[in-house]
Amino acid sequence: MKKGGLNPKLKLSLPPPDEDSISKFLTQSGTFKDGDLLVNKDGVRIVPRNEVVAPSVIKPSDDQLSLADIDTIKVIGKGNGGIVQLVQHKWTGQFFALKVIQMNIQESYRKQIAQELKINQSAQCPYVVVCYQSFYDNGAISIVLEYMDGGSLADFLQKVKTIAEPYLAAICKQVLKGLLYLHREKHIIHRDLKPSNLLVNHRGEVKITDFGVSAILATTSGQANTFVGTYNYMSPERISGGKYGYKSDIWSLGLVLLECATGRFPYSPPELGEGWNSFYELMEAIVDQPPPCAPSSHFSPEFCSFISACVQKDPTDRQSAHELMTHPFISMYEDLDVDLASYFTNAGSPLATF
Ligand code: ATP
Ligand code: MG
Image 1 (cartoon, protein in one colour):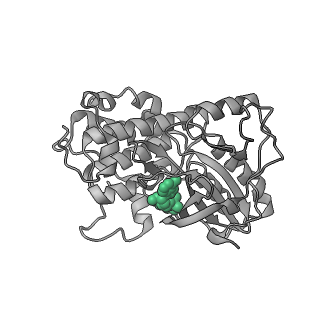
Image 2 (cartoon, rainbow, N blue to C red):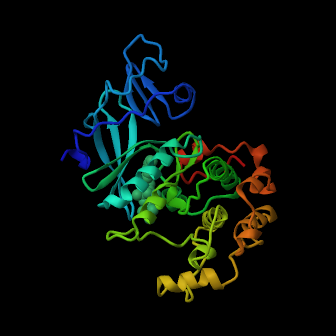
Image 3 (cartoon, rainbow, N blue to C red):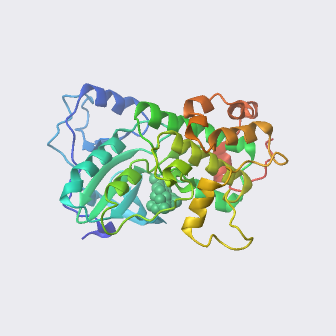
């Protein structure tokens, strides 16, 4: 095995070229070209110099690039499912995040997982982390992702403790656009929206990640080595084992925003200073207690109303991503021209701009 647990013989597979993918290739973000090398969501390709990038030029079988050309820089994160490494392309210096999930997938699940990974790779939106390639090899799924140099909102929240409303509105707008895309265009329920699955970068961008991963992990949940993630942001209808849909993600969004605003997870344990006695107690609280709300003494009526529109216990009472886009909270700070780029870069900077 090579550095980073990757098989050096593993080749990046090339899908057959088509007009559509080539035009996206040239115009959309997430596409990278440096000399002979072209990288986009479909993989890494070598295109002979001085040739126009046209469908006829990109041959599906030639010039494949081995993952051996990618160096591991360092581990940047660990989750329940595996590790995330910062990797760099040897020739171009381009950075990627490589997520490696250890799991021995039974033959019967492979097709389904391949399908999920394909959906993952087909997502193209500025508010969703680009998935360039994925592989299954030697008991591990490796996913090459867009590198987000600001880390996750969970990491960021640890530094700043709370996020003021104007920043939160700007962050929320981007997350809603990402959700709108996943729900309406891709028909994907994220299922695991939480602060660590919202990534930020120095350009002030906020993007949703891991939208396919939870589906993959759910697929294999009958097997050993099962995912035990956080269920904290899970909607009451999911916890109860009922039917759930896109609105389940909206519940999670409401809890995430409330946590960012107040600096703590909205469901407090029964006795101060103690954690939840068991996972089941928290689950019970989410299902049985009234939903949390933003204290009106500390937050604008618009923010309180936005949270309430998200965390209705009955999903039919919750607003959709599309409806929430026009909520007054989203637009109320627009005149301030909030600079998320410097906020994310200089974490903890005072709100001097307001
Ligand atoms: P869980 O396993 O419970 O879902 P998680 O979301 O934190 O938790 P991972 O998805 O494995 O677990 O991510 C671990 C950490 O790696 C993230 O919190 C984030 O800091 C970092 N990370 C993940 N993806 C990227 C990326 N594309 N760019 C930069 N950092 C990333
Ligand atoms: Mg994650």
